[in-house]
Image 1: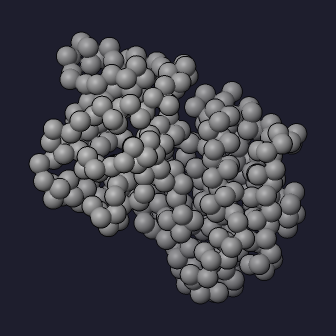
Image 2: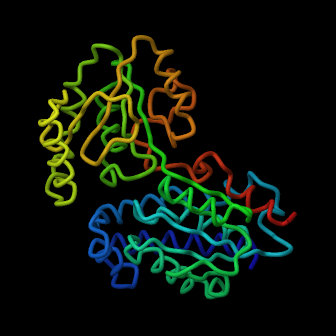
Image 3: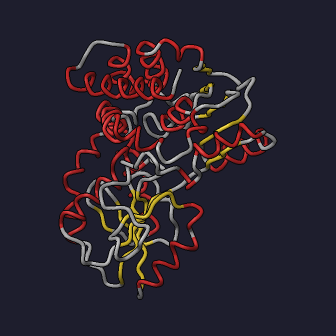
Length: 348
């Protein structure tokens, strides 16, 4: 297939996502959306729908795809010797491995997907849907629940413990190994109510389980939390999700026993901490005296931060409030360009 044909197939896949979401079309994909939570309770229909809609709108529009590949030499998408790339996908949020799936196939290579047991059959349904739209992909896509075999390179994503395991077993192969990451937000007290409302999306979407989910706030000393906590009220129904509620209630009990200072909204605990990775149902914050102190903290934790949310005049690399779960197609995890990595495999 030519690159134009591959991209056309993905654009049609995006259209299929949109159609399935808009009319509850009966299909393998539609069934997977509704049943994913049976295998993974965190994959609620709303969260799965959000993931599909975001992918369709932000990545799979023809103009987006064409602008994306225009950043690279044509040779990146016309390999002389296509390779087989094993992609180990995490299962923390719905379709978290889709971007790797897109990159490998867009570059004309073959992919073997090792799915997470927590995937809820979503990625398999997406792959089958793509093959239905463009049958020539059937020879380029393999999915396994077992051990990866017969691969030339590996892209693996998981927890920090998993990353150490991946590095041990796959370190001798060309590889991208990704461990756990978090998002952080820098506040100054000058944010608008709209900013704070959108920040809630960065914190609560996917129950805060994404590698881009904001798990900590950096706030000025003496910061007033009232406007912020008021803006979170629209997320109060999260407490009706049994697993989220169990985590929240457990953490609240621990805070009570240990007399840990915190704010309690009835569905979220906000507590001071120097740590970065907060548990489900908890949001950390840390005060700073000078903005330079906040920027220093970010610099010290740069290797474990996937994104920084805030006003651009405060931090040049900050992304806008409300955009953490909607990355640009060219915004690569850990700032490692997957297309460049895949193109370099031709030289091996």
